[in-house]
Length: 337
Image 1 (cartoon, rainbow, N blue to C red):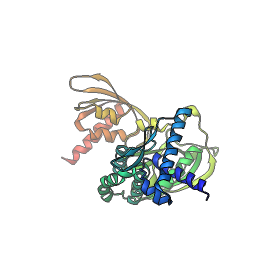
Image 2: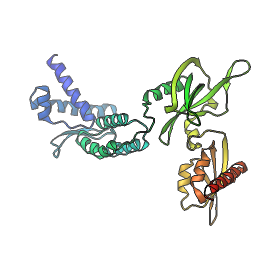
Image 3: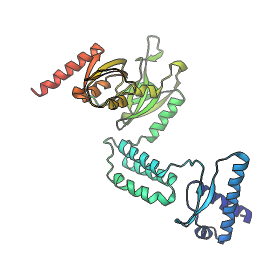
Image 4: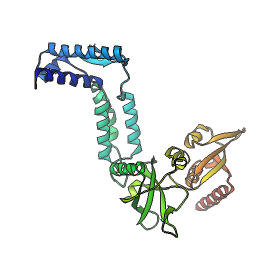
């Protein structure tokens, strides 16, 4: 390597690390590259000149190299960093830990990569120490399955409109595997688990594959035993395309089903908790003792949520759901009589 190539490599190395929020100490850099500190200073001056040129000629955000007396080194200031801040990395880490979405080994690897790639070097130990206890006491889910590869494969299936064959293990009653031909349309995460949204296909009288139901089914990823590309693609009409966000707003506890227009009275103290839980909900009437709420929801999962609210809710319509609630409450009363 020529002297010029060595200098370019050295300067680029420092520039990248400065962009990552890392500290440059002249003495340490001189030892790292086997040069004197004056050479490192000239490299820093070149980086300063480059930043000034980018700002003057191309309107880039103002960034500058400054000396931090407390840390005894040079840092880059200004501009919108693409790295997460300390508070952001800590908050996201807490969410990941609380989700329990990954095995203990996976969550440890993910958090270590996030900290190493995003947190400024001076704060790495502090952030790592703040998370160390939670990582140690992290309890992985009972299925203990690594799902990252499957999530990626299904993501590609969705993007490429690939019809796939899955073997799925049901847990209701006797455990058994069942094969399905499905059209994957979405991936969701809720209440500790990843789910695949997919239309189940079955052959009609002419042998043509058609949707078994008008709405997509939900498959928990840890129960998908095998996934196989069928070699066929399916068509999606843009105006009828599946939208994960809209489906998620109307689904509770990942129980699919038909779309229901729900109306209920809420007698609780804070309606915000209801509106946060049911994103499609809106207050249509306010009374002294209750608020009348309407929402659009899919499936039977909403029954579980309504029951969890105890005496704070009264279902008004649809009438079929009101009757279902009555019957369930009667059955529950029998346990205590």
